[in-house]
Amino acid sequence: MRTLRMENGRPVVADDPLHVLRDLLEFARDWARLRGRRREEAWAEWFAPDGPGITVPDTFAATRLTDPEDVPPEWAGLFDPDVAEIWGLWTFHVGRAPDAAVLPGPELRHLLARAAELWRDLPDP
Image (cartoon, one colour):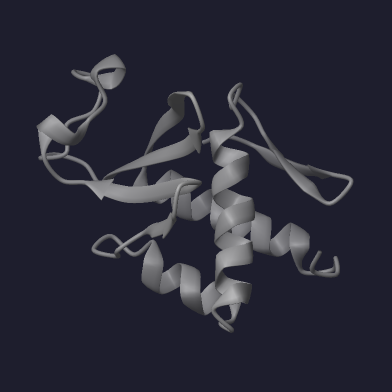
């Protein structure tokens, strides 16, 4: 599993060169707050194995990949949605392709739990 630490209140995730996992954590935190929901409650619902994920229009999406056709080509063959719970994450940009990451469900929830732990003592931005 990837490690997570905070620098100046922002998550830094190991092996996240495009910062898609950092974006997941920050958007999930902010999306819960904008919806008036407690972070951990919202995350438990959104990122449960059968959860809907989140979509921040034109900005970010995290969704469960349930069909091999859903897996981005660069990860085809590495992940089999028929065998494991796989999540696709995308940070969208104007004028260029989105940055993407694929993550097993247990690792996604591990990062969310660790972020909640680290943010617990920090004020919301």
